[in-house]
Length: 469
Image 1 (cartoon, helix red, strand yellow):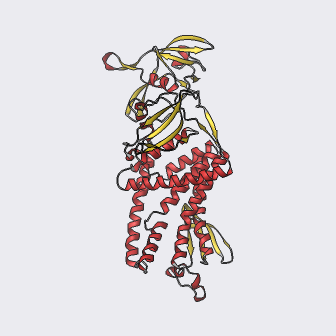
Image 2 (cartoon, rainbow, N blue to C red):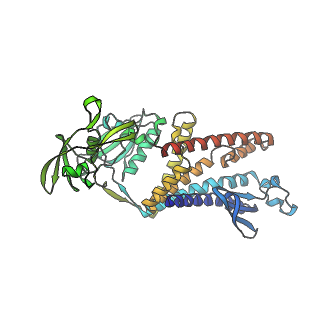
Image 3 (cartoon, rainbow, N blue to C red):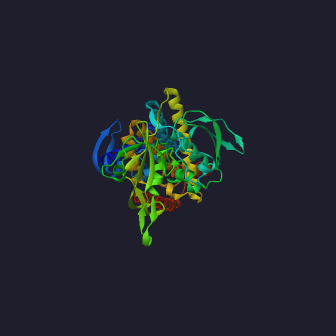
Protein backbone atom coordinates (compact mmCIF):
# COMPACT_ATOMS: atom_id res chain seq x y z
CA UNK A 1 0.00 0.00 0.00
CA UNK A 2 2.78 2.44 0.92
CA UNK A 3 4.63 1.57 -2.29
CA UNK A 4 1.49 2.25 -4.33
CA UNK A 5 0.89 5.64 -2.67
CA UNK A 6 4.52 6.73 -3.05
CA UNK A 7 4.63 5.56 -6.69
CA UNK A 8 1.40 7.45 -7.41
CA UNK A 9 2.69 10.65 -5.81
CA UNK A 10 5.99 10.35 -7.70
CA UNK A 11 4.09 9.82 -10.97
CA UNK A 12 1.91 12.87 -10.39
CA UNK A 13 4.85 14.97 -9.23
CA UNK A 14 7.02 14.23 -12.25
CA UNK A 15 4.25 14.75 -14.81
CA UNK A 16 2.93 17.94 -13.22
CA UNK A 17 6.40 19.49 -12.87
CA UNK A 18 7.30 18.73 -16.49
CA UNK A 19 3.95 20.01 -17.78
CA UNK A 20 4.14 23.27 -15.85
CA UNK A 21 7.84 23.67 -16.60
CA UNK A 22 6.96 23.61 -20.30
CA UNK A 23 4.63 26.57 -19.79
CA UNK A 24 7.15 28.33 -17.54
CA UNK A 25 10.20 27.86 -19.78
CA UNK A 26 8.48 29.11 -22.95
CA UNK A 27 6.86 32.01 -21.07
CA UNK A 28 10.27 33.16 -19.85
CA UNK A 29 11.73 32.72 -23.35
CA UNK A 30 8.92 34.91 -24.73
CA UNK A 31 9.66 37.66 -22.21
CA UNK A 32 6.56 37.10 -20.04
CA UNK A 33 6.97 37.64 -16.30
CA UNK A 34 6.03 34.52 -14.29
CA UNK A 35 4.66 35.27 -10.81
CA UNK A 36 4.17 31.74 -9.47
CA UNK A 37 5.03 28.16 -10.41
CA UNK A 38 2.83 25.87 -8.30
CA UNK A 39 2.73 22.11 -7.97
CA UNK A 40 -0.67 21.37 -6.49
CA UNK A 41 -3.66 23.53 -5.59
CA UNK A 42 -4.98 25.05 -2.40
CA UNK A 43 -3.03 25.99 0.70
CA UNK A 44 0.69 26.58 0.13
CA UNK A 45 2.81 24.25 2.27
CA UNK A 46 6.24 25.31 0.95
CA UNK A 47 7.48 28.21 -1.16
CA UNK A 48 10.70 29.83 -2.29
CA UNK A 49 11.46 32.74 -4.62
CA UNK A 50 13.93 32.19 -7.42
CA UNK A 51 15.27 33.92 -10.51
CA UNK A 52 15.65 37.56 -11.61
CA UNK A 53 11.87 38.12 -11.55
CA UNK A 54 11.49 36.63 -8.06
CA UNK A 55 9.16 33.90 -9.30
CA UNK A 56 7.52 32.08 -6.37
CA UNK A 57 7.92 28.29 -6.58
CA UNK A 58 5.39 26.53 -4.34
CA UNK A 59 4.11 23.14 -3.22
CA UNK A 60 0.43 23.16 -2.36
CA UNK A 61 -1.74 20.84 -0.30
CA UNK A 62 -3.76 19.16 -3.11
CA UNK A 63 -1.23 17.50 -5.47
CA UNK A 64 -3.67 16.74 -8.31
CA UNK A 65 -2.40 19.34 -10.74
CA UNK A 66 -0.51 22.59 -10.90
CA UNK A 67 -0.38 25.98 -12.57
CA UNK A 68 1.88 28.79 -13.76
CA UNK A 69 0.59 32.26 -12.93
CA UNK A 70 1.85 34.96 -15.27
CA UNK A 71 1.61 38.73 -15.22
CA UNK A 72 -1.76 39.53 -16.83
CA UNK A 73 -3.85 42.69 -16.90
CA UNK A 74 -7.03 40.62 -16.76
CA UNK A 75 -6.11 39.42 -13.27
CA UNK A 76 -5.06 42.71 -11.67
CA UNK A 77 -3.32 46.02 -12.11
CA UNK A 78 0.00 45.90 -13.92
CA UNK A 79 2.54 48.71 -13.54
CA UNK A 80 3.04 50.68 -16.74
CA UNK A 81 6.72 49.78 -16.99
CA UNK A 82 5.89 46.03 -16.96
CA UNK A 83 2.88 45.96 -19.29
CA UNK A 84 5.05 44.79 -22.18
CA UNK A 85 5.76 41.66 -20.10
CA UNK A 86 2.07 40.81 -19.44
CA UNK A 87 0.76 37.64 -21.04
CA UNK A 88 -2.30 39.34 -22.51
CA UNK A 89 -0.07 41.89 -24.33
CA UNK A 90 1.87 39.20 -26.20
CA UNK A 91 1.37 38.48 -29.93
CA UNK A 92 -0.94 35.60 -30.76
CA UNK A 93 1.94 33.29 -31.74
CA UNK A 94 3.67 33.74 -28.40
CA UNK A 95 0.50 33.13 -26.39
CA UNK A 96 -0.24 29.98 -28.38
CA UNK A 97 3.35 28.75 -27.93
CA UNK A 98 3.19 29.27 -24.16
CA UNK A 99 -0.10 27.40 -23.85
CA UNK A 100 0.94 24.52 -26.12
CA UNK A 101 4.30 24.10 -24.36
CA UNK A 102 2.82 22.18 -21.39
CA UNK A 103 1.26 19.30 -23.34
CA UNK A 104 4.21 19.20 -25.74
CA UNK A 105 6.57 18.92 -22.77
CA UNK A 106 4.62 15.83 -21.63
CA UNK A 107 4.91 14.28 -25.09
CA UNK A 108 8.65 15.04 -25.23
CA UNK A 109 9.04 13.50 -21.77
CA UNK A 110 7.23 10.38 -23.00
CA UNK A 111 9.74 9.99 -25.83
CA UNK A 112 12.63 10.09 -23.35
CA UNK A 113 10.90 7.77 -20.88
CA UNK A 114 10.10 5.18 -23.54
CA UNK A 115 13.68 5.49 -24.79
CA UNK A 116 15.01 5.01 -21.25
CA UNK A 117 12.87 1.91 -20.86
CA UNK A 118 14.28 0.54 -24.15
CA UNK A 119 17.86 1.37 -23.12
CA UNK A 120 17.55 -0.35 -19.73
CA UNK A 121 15.77 -3.35 -21.17
CA UNK A 122 12.80 -5.31 -19.89
CA UNK A 123 12.49 -9.03 -19.31
CA UNK A 124 9.17 -9.85 -20.93
CA UNK A 125 7.39 -13.14 -21.65
CA UNK A 126 7.93 -14.47 -25.15
CA UNK A 127 4.87 -14.39 -27.40
CA UNK A 128 4.16 -18.09 -26.77
CA UNK A 129 0.41 -18.57 -26.50
CA UNK A 130 -1.75 -20.37 -24.01
CA UNK A 131 -4.70 -22.28 -25.43
CA UNK A 132 -7.28 -19.79 -26.77
CA UNK A 133 -10.76 -19.95 -25.28
CA UNK A 134 -13.19 -22.11 -27.22
CA UNK A 135 -15.01 -20.08 -29.86
CA UNK A 136 -12.69 -17.06 -29.58
CA UNK A 137 -11.28 -15.41 -32.73
CA UNK A 138 -7.83 -16.84 -31.91
CA UNK A 139 -9.25 -20.36 -31.61
CA UNK A 140 -11.21 -20.01 -34.87
CA UNK A 141 -8.06 -18.78 -36.61
CA UNK A 142 -6.32 -22.05 -35.73
CA UNK A 143 -4.01 -20.85 -32.97
CA UNK A 144 -3.23 -23.41 -30.29
CA UNK A 145 -1.33 -23.83 -27.05
CA UNK A 146 2.43 -23.46 -27.51
CA UNK A 147 2.27 -21.39 -30.70
CA UNK A 148 5.07 -18.81 -30.82
CA UNK A 149 4.05 -15.63 -32.70
CA UNK A 150 7.18 -14.32 -34.41
CA UNK A 151 5.82 -11.41 -36.43
CA UNK A 152 2.67 -9.57 -37.54
CA UNK A 153 1.34 -7.68 -40.52
CA UNK A 154 -1.87 -5.65 -40.66
CA UNK A 155 -3.78 -6.16 -43.90
CA UNK A 156 -5.33 -3.26 -45.83
CA UNK A 157 -7.93 -4.22 -48.45
CA UNK A 158 -6.42 -7.68 -48.61
CA UNK A 159 -2.89 -6.43 -49.31
CA UNK A 160 -0.28 -7.55 -46.79
CA UNK A 161 2.05 -4.89 -45.41
CA UNK A 162 5.65 -5.41 -44.35
CA UNK A 163 6.15 -7.88 -41.50
CA UNK A 164 6.92 -6.46 -38.07
CA UNK A 165 9.07 -8.74 -35.92
CA UNK A 166 7.77 -9.33 -32.40
CA UNK A 167 10.04 -9.65 -29.40
CA UNK A 168 7.53 -10.28 -26.62
CA UNK A 169 3.92 -10.91 -25.66
CA UNK A 170 3.56 -7.18 -24.89
CA UNK A 171 4.42 -6.40 -28.53
CA UNK A 172 1.77 -8.85 -29.72
CA UNK A 173 -0.94 -7.43 -27.46
CA UNK A 174 -0.12 -3.88 -28.61
CA UNK A 175 -0.37 -4.90 -32.28
CA UNK A 176 -3.67 -6.72 -31.70
CA UNK A 177 -5.16 -3.69 -29.92
CA UNK A 178 -4.08 -1.34 -32.73
CA UNK A 179 -5.51 -3.63 -35.40
CA UNK A 180 -8.87 -3.93 -33.61
CA UNK A 181 -9.12 -0.15 -33.17
CA UNK A 182 -8.36 0.28 -36.89
CA UNK A 183 -10.79 -2.50 -37.89
CA UNK A 184 -8.02 -4.49 -39.58
CA UNK A 185 -7.33 -8.19 -39.67
CA UNK A 186 -3.91 -9.17 -38.35
CA UNK A 187 -1.65 -11.60 -40.15
CA UNK A 188 0.49 -13.62 -37.74
CA UNK A 189 3.70 -15.48 -38.53
CA UNK A 190 3.69 -18.46 -36.17
CA UNK A 191 6.06 -21.32 -35.30
CA UNK A 192 6.08 -24.00 -32.64
CA UNK A 193 7.93 -23.41 -29.36
CA UNK A 194 11.19 -24.65 -30.89
CA UNK A 195 10.96 -22.15 -33.77
CA UNK A 196 10.02 -24.73 -36.42
CA UNK A 197 6.91 -25.49 -38.50
CA UNK A 198 6.45 -21.89 -39.65
CA UNK A 199 2.99 -20.92 -40.88
CA UNK A 200 0.79 -17.85 -41.41
CA UNK A 201 -2.46 -17.30 -39.54
CA UNK A 202 -5.07 -14.58 -40.06
CA UNK A 203 -6.54 -13.26 -36.81
CA UNK A 204 -9.99 -11.86 -37.72
CA UNK A 205 -10.28 -8.42 -36.14
CA UNK A 206 -11.72 -6.29 -38.98
CA UNK A 207 -15.30 -6.94 -37.82
CA UNK A 208 -14.45 -6.53 -34.15
CA UNK A 209 -16.50 -3.80 -32.44
CA UNK A 210 -14.08 -1.10 -31.17
CA UNK A 211 -16.48 -0.50 -28.28
CA UNK A 212 -15.31 -3.83 -26.89
CA UNK A 213 -11.67 -2.72 -26.67
CA UNK A 214 -11.49 -2.55 -22.89
CA UNK A 215 -9.73 -4.34 -20.05
CA UNK A 216 -11.25 -7.69 -21.06
CA UNK A 217 -10.65 -7.30 -24.79
CA UNK A 218 -7.62 -9.57 -25.13
CA UNK A 219 -9.33 -12.31 -23.13
CA UNK A 220 -12.26 -12.23 -25.57
CA UNK A 221 -9.90 -12.34 -28.54
CA UNK A 222 -8.32 -15.41 -26.95
CA UNK A 223 -4.85 -14.01 -26.20
CA UNK A 224 -5.07 -13.42 -22.46
CA UNK A 225 -2.50 -15.94 -21.24
CA UNK A 226 1.10 -17.02 -21.69
CA UNK A 227 1.99 -20.64 -22.30
CA UNK A 228 3.08 -22.43 -19.13
CA UNK A 229 4.43 -25.95 -18.74
CA UNK A 230 2.01 -28.32 -16.88
CA UNK A 231 4.46 -28.78 -14.01
CA UNK A 232 3.24 -28.46 -10.43
CA UNK A 233 4.68 -25.75 -8.26
CA UNK A 234 3.75 -25.36 -4.60
CA UNK A 235 1.56 -28.16 -3.20
CA UNK A 236 -0.27 -27.17 0.00
CA UNK A 237 0.22 -29.63 2.86
CA UNK A 238 -2.89 -31.69 3.65
CA UNK A 239 -4.72 -30.30 0.60
CA UNK A 240 -6.47 -32.54 -1.95
CA UNK A 241 -3.37 -32.72 -4.18
CA UNK A 242 -1.03 -33.59 -1.30
CA UNK A 243 -3.41 -36.23 0.08
CA UNK A 244 -3.59 -37.85 -3.38
CA UNK A 245 0.23 -38.04 -3.52
CA UNK A 246 0.97 -35.22 -5.96
CA UNK A 247 4.30 -33.46 -5.37
CA UNK A 248 6.07 -30.31 -6.41
CA UNK A 249 7.78 -30.84 -9.78
CA UNK A 250 5.31 -33.45 -11.05
CA UNK A 251 4.58 -33.00 -14.78
CA UNK A 252 0.91 -33.64 -15.57
CA UNK A 253 0.68 -35.80 -18.70
CA UNK A 254 -3.06 -36.49 -18.80
CA UNK A 255 -6.28 -36.02 -16.83
CA UNK A 256 -9.06 -38.58 -17.28
CA UNK A 257 -7.20 -39.95 -20.29
CA UNK A 258 -7.02 -36.59 -22.10
CA UNK A 259 -3.44 -35.41 -22.86
CA UNK A 260 -2.34 -32.21 -21.13
CA UNK A 261 0.09 -29.88 -22.91
CA UNK A 262 -0.08 -26.78 -20.69
CA UNK A 263 -0.92 -25.67 -17.17
CA UNK A 264 -4.16 -23.95 -18.18
CA UNK A 265 -5.66 -27.35 -19.08
CA UNK A 266 -4.96 -28.55 -15.52
CA UNK A 267 -6.65 -25.47 -14.04
CA UNK A 268 -9.72 -25.83 -16.26
CA UNK A 269 -10.10 -29.57 -15.58
CA UNK A 270 -9.92 -29.04 -11.82
CA UNK A 271 -12.30 -26.06 -11.85
CA UNK A 272 -14.86 -28.05 -13.85
CA UNK A 273 -14.74 -31.15 -11.60
CA UNK A 274 -18.16 -30.42 -10.09
CA UNK A 275 -21.22 -32.67 -10.56
CA UNK A 276 -24.75 -32.79 -9.23
CA UNK A 277 -25.17 -35.29 -6.41
CA UNK A 278 -28.24 -36.77 -4.77
CA UNK A 279 -30.97 -34.18 -4.42
CA UNK A 280 -29.17 -31.83 -6.78
CA UNK A 281 -26.45 -30.89 -4.29
CA UNK A 282 -23.09 -30.13 -5.89
CA UNK A 283 -20.20 -32.46 -5.14
CA UNK A 284 -16.63 -32.94 -6.42
CA UNK A 285 -15.79 -35.43 -9.16
CA UNK A 286 -12.63 -37.53 -8.72
CA UNK A 287 -10.03 -36.93 -11.45
CA UNK A 288 -7.56 -39.51 -12.77
CA UNK A 289 -4.14 -37.83 -13.04
CA UNK A 290 -1.23 -39.34 -14.95
CA UNK A 291 2.01 -37.59 -14.01
CA UNK A 292 5.69 -37.95 -14.74
CA UNK A 293 8.06 -37.92 -11.74
CA UNK A 294 11.80 -38.52 -12.07
CA UNK A 295 11.31 -40.37 -15.36
CA UNK A 296 8.50 -42.58 -14.05
CA UNK A 297 4.80 -42.43 -14.98
CA UNK A 298 2.35 -42.50 -12.05
CA UNK A 299 -1.44 -42.84 -11.94
CA UNK A 300 -3.12 -40.93 -9.09
CA UNK A 301 -6.73 -40.17 -8.21
CA UNK A 302 -7.43 -36.63 -6.96
CA UNK A 303 -10.71 -35.46 -5.45
CA UNK A 304 -10.92 -31.65 -5.44
CA UNK A 305 -12.55 -29.64 -2.70
CA UNK A 306 -15.33 -27.21 -3.68
CA UNK A 307 -15.24 -23.45 -3.33
CA UNK A 308 -17.95 -20.92 -4.13
CA UNK A 309 -16.47 -17.95 -6.00
CA UNK A 310 -17.59 -14.84 -7.86
CA UNK A 311 -16.46 -15.03 -11.50
CA UNK A 312 -17.00 -12.85 -14.57
CA UNK A 313 -19.95 -15.12 -15.41
CA UNK A 314 -21.43 -14.76 -11.90
CA UNK A 315 -21.21 -16.89 -8.71
CA UNK A 316 -19.98 -20.46 -9.42
CA UNK A 317 -18.85 -23.50 -7.52
CA UNK A 318 -15.33 -24.46 -8.59
CA UNK A 319 -12.99 -27.33 -7.85
CA UNK A 320 -9.68 -26.71 -6.06
CA UNK A 321 -6.79 -29.12 -5.35
CA UNK A 322 -4.55 -26.65 -3.44
CA UNK A 323 -1.61 -26.99 -5.84
CA UNK A 324 -0.13 -24.42 -8.18
CA UNK A 325 0.12 -25.78 -11.73
CA UNK A 326 2.47 -24.09 -14.15
CA UNK A 327 5.91 -22.55 -14.31
CA UNK A 328 6.84 -18.91 -14.97
CA UNK A 329 6.66 -18.23 -18.73
CA UNK A 330 9.89 -18.16 -20.73
CA UNK A 331 11.20 -14.60 -20.90
CA UNK A 332 13.41 -12.60 -23.23
CA UNK A 333 15.39 -9.44 -22.53
CA UNK A 334 14.11 -6.67 -24.82
CA UNK A 335 16.79 -3.97 -25.07
CA UNK A 336 17.82 -1.44 -27.73
CA UNK A 337 20.82 0.79 -28.39
CA UNK A 338 20.91 4.59 -27.92
CA UNK A 339 19.70 5.59 -31.40
CA UNK A 340 17.22 2.74 -31.89
CA UNK A 341 15.86 3.25 -28.38
CA UNK A 342 15.24 6.94 -29.01
CA UNK A 343 13.63 6.32 -32.39
CA UNK A 344 11.41 3.62 -30.91
CA UNK A 345 10.52 5.99 -28.07
CA UNK A 346 9.37 8.61 -30.58
CA UNK A 347 7.49 5.99 -32.59
CA UNK A 348 5.72 4.57 -29.56
CA UNK A 349 4.79 8.08 -28.32
CA UNK A 350 3.24 8.88 -31.71
CA UNK A 351 1.40 5.56 -31.89
CA UNK A 352 -0.01 5.86 -28.36
CA UNK A 353 -1.03 9.49 -29.03
CA UNK A 354 -2.90 8.53 -32.21
CA UNK A 355 -4.53 5.54 -30.51
CA UNK A 356 -5.59 7.74 -27.57
CA UNK A 357 -7.17 10.35 -29.86
CA UNK A 358 -8.99 7.66 -31.83
CA UNK A 359 -10.19 6.00 -28.65
CA UNK A 360 -11.50 9.29 -27.25
CA UNK A 361 -13.18 10.10 -30.56
CA UNK A 362 -14.86 6.73 -30.72
CA UNK A 363 -15.98 6.97 -27.10
CA UNK A 364 -17.52 10.34 -27.99
CA UNK A 365 -19.61 8.87 -30.84
CA UNK A 366 -20.37 5.63 -29.02
CA UNK A 367 -18.06 3.34 -31.03
CA UNK A 368 -15.76 2.55 -28.07
CA UNK A 369 -16.51 1.62 -24.49
CA UNK A 370 -16.42 4.28 -21.76
CA UNK A 371 -14.83 1.56 -19.61
CA UNK A 372 -11.50 2.63 -21.13
CA UNK A 373 -11.50 5.83 -19.06
CA UNK A 374 -9.37 5.41 -15.94
CA UNK A 375 -9.10 7.60 -12.87
CA UNK A 376 -6.61 8.11 -10.05
CA UNK A 377 -7.33 4.79 -8.32
CA UNK A 378 -6.42 2.74 -11.39
CA UNK A 379 -3.39 4.93 -12.10
CA UNK A 380 -2.19 4.49 -8.51
CA UNK A 381 -2.68 0.72 -8.71
CA UNK A 382 -0.73 0.43 -11.96
CA UNK A 383 1.97 2.76 -10.64
CA UNK A 384 2.53 0.49 -7.64
CA UNK A 385 2.59 -2.65 -9.79
CA UNK A 386 5.05 -1.18 -12.31
CA UNK A 387 7.44 -0.02 -9.57
CA UNK A 388 7.54 -3.54 -8.15
CA UNK A 389 8.40 -4.94 -11.61
CA UNK A 390 11.46 -2.73 -12.00
CA UNK A 391 12.66 0.65 -13.25
CA UNK A 392 12.17 -0.10 -16.95
CA UNK A 393 8.51 -1.10 -16.40
CA UNK A 394 7.90 2.02 -14.32
CA UNK A 395 9.44 4.28 -16.98
CA UNK A 396 7.16 2.71 -19.59
CA UNK A 397 4.12 3.24 -17.36
CA UNK A 398 5.16 6.84 -16.67
CA UNK A 399 5.54 7.42 -20.42
CA UNK A 400 2.04 6.08 -21.06
CA UNK A 401 0.48 8.40 -18.47
CA UNK A 402 2.55 11.32 -19.79
CA UNK A 403 1.20 10.74 -23.30
CA UNK A 404 -2.34 10.54 -21.93
CA UNK A 405 -1.88 13.79 -20.01
CA UNK A 406 -0.41 15.55 -23.04
CA UNK A 407 -3.18 14.41 -25.38
CA UNK A 408 -5.94 15.14 -22.85
CA UNK A 409 -4.69 18.69 -22.35
CA UNK A 410 -4.71 19.30 -26.11
CA UNK A 411 -8.41 18.46 -26.38
CA UNK A 412 -10.45 21.52 -27.47
CA UNK A 413 -12.22 21.81 -24.13
CA UNK A 414 -12.42 25.02 -22.10
CA UNK A 415 -10.40 24.75 -18.87
CA UNK A 416 -7.76 22.75 -20.77
CA UNK A 417 -4.81 24.02 -22.80
CA UNK A 418 -6.51 22.82 -25.97
CA UNK A 419 -9.49 25.04 -25.17
CA UNK A 420 -7.26 28.11 -25.02
CA UNK A 421 -5.64 27.10 -28.31
CA UNK A 422 -9.16 26.86 -29.76
CA UNK A 423 -9.75 30.48 -28.69
CA UNK A 424 -6.50 31.56 -30.34
CA UNK A 425 -7.43 29.80 -33.59
CA UNK A 426 -10.71 31.73 -33.56
CA UNK A 427 -8.80 34.94 -32.90
CA UNK A 428 -6.33 34.20 -35.69
CA UNK A 429 -9.14 33.52 -38.19
CA UNK A 430 -11.47 36.41 -37.25
CA UNK A 431 -8.92 38.95 -36.05
CA UNK A 432 -10.71 39.46 -32.73
CA UNK A 433 -10.67 37.53 -29.42
CA UNK A 434 -13.59 35.49 -28.11
CA UNK A 435 -16.01 37.76 -26.24
CA UNK A 436 -16.19 37.67 -22.46
CA UNK A 437 -19.80 36.43 -22.62
CA UNK A 438 -18.86 33.46 -24.80
CA UNK A 439 -15.80 32.75 -22.68
CA UNK A 440 -18.05 32.45 -19.61
CA UNK A 441 -20.49 30.13 -21.42
CA UNK A 442 -17.73 27.92 -22.80
CA UNK A 443 -16.05 27.80 -19.40
CA UNK A 444 -19.22 26.54 -17.76
CA UNK A 445 -19.71 23.94 -20.49
CA UNK A 446 -16.11 22.81 -20.15
CA UNK A 447 -16.51 22.32 -16.41
CA UNK A 448 -19.59 20.15 -17.00
CA UNK A 449 -17.76 17.99 -19.56
CA UNK A 450 -14.70 17.57 -17.34
CA UNK A 451 -16.84 16.69 -14.30
CA UNK A 452 -18.69 14.10 -16.40
CA UNK A 453 -15.40 12.55 -17.57
CA UNK A 454 -14.05 12.49 -14.01
CA UNK A 455 -17.26 10.85 -12.76
CA UNK A 456 -17.10 8.12 -15.41
CA UNK A 457 -13.39 7.54 -14.68
CA UNK A 458 -14.01 7.23 -10.93
CA UNK A 459 -16.96 4.90 -11.54
CA UNK A 460 -14.72 2.71 -13.72
CA UNK A 461 -12.06 2.74 -10.99
CA UNK A 462 -14.54 1.50 -8.40
CA UNK A 463 -15.99 -1.09 -10.80
CA UNK A 464 -12.50 -2.50 -11.46
CA UNK A 465 -11.76 -2.49 -7.74
CA UNK A 466 -14.94 -4.48 -7.09
CA UNK A 467 -14.30 -6.85 -10.01
CA UNK A 468 -17.31 -5.60 -12.03
CA UNK A 469 -15.21 -4.76 -15.13
